[in-house]
Image (tube, rainbow, N blue to C red; front, top):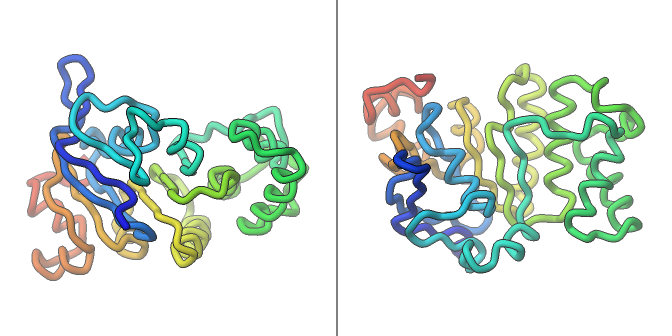
Length: 243
């Protein structure tokens, strides 16, 4: 089953073309990654998928629904883990989950039970009553992951989910993502960490200047072009991923 379908997808910001007539499909249960330097168009694609940004032109369907006509239905079935920490600093760990559940009209009894289950999932139960100001960076990332799951989504959007984390915290988030994938959740992520893409992604779309250069599995890309994913990117685009 195709979870996300894009044909000639384009996004313009006034005179700037951020995403330039790209085509791709993402299958149900797949972990699909968008790779590229800052400004390549990765985050813009993600924001159109979860209906945060309108499409300029082209076709984009999520779960078989057109994003322009069925944004509310798509959002209800999508979990979003943003790149920036936007947790409520005035609330505790548990309260951040329960309050966020209101956006999905989840009843308090249901959201409370689900929140405790998610705190167990991300190993933060003992921090339930702690204000988020007192959490480490890794704990905050795990809480963001838990919050994105409060509506039991079919699709997870993860924008640079482990940026800035130490190796131990990064691997802890990877473990949770691998479990979600094993459960059949579709994962769509952007990342600068090539080890992350190699470990988690079934396929990746390498982007540059708003276009998709190639779509393939990390294993095939490295086999065909030689070297690691960053070296593959350099060969295909003439640019470093960090550029």
